[in-house]
Length: 231
Image (cartoon, one colour):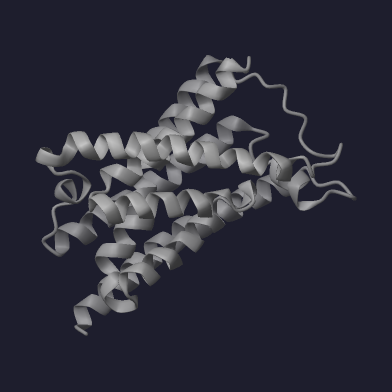
């Protein structure tokens, strides 16, 4: 095991852990501002998106601030991030795989509906309305910024820089726990989404696939809210 491999793994873990703790802690603190005696975890989690502007801006800020460090880590090791994301001759099939798996991941999210019914009357009373500005910001933050950046951190880092240290599958699963911790408020769904992303990534070997799965799943959720009258 080369010393450089250990250093790269350490940098990858540090960047991803910083992002995870920053966003997860901010979400928890923001939600706890609304705490009332008698709330359960689902009630507290419901307040993470009580202020949608702050929620979305937090994702944009956290992901983009750390992106230069991620880009430099690839460049310093002579790795083309562009080639890690897509390969021109396979792009069409990779996009198709991403779309299909995004639909599957969205269908899996329906399994969490009974879980969310555990909220009490103390949970956030969502009015269902997003508005044009919030909708655009959600698309930017959750579909593009999160869909692209988080897959570089949680899938790309795991496989490229930590796979040689922990083993590829182990590294991907360990980073997936961090991925789920960042999105703690959806009570485990992100871990399942991460598994779908890992499957697509392992099958097609390009980050474009989990990026489409991740961003596509979020886009489907936003479209669902709009269709159900939340626009």
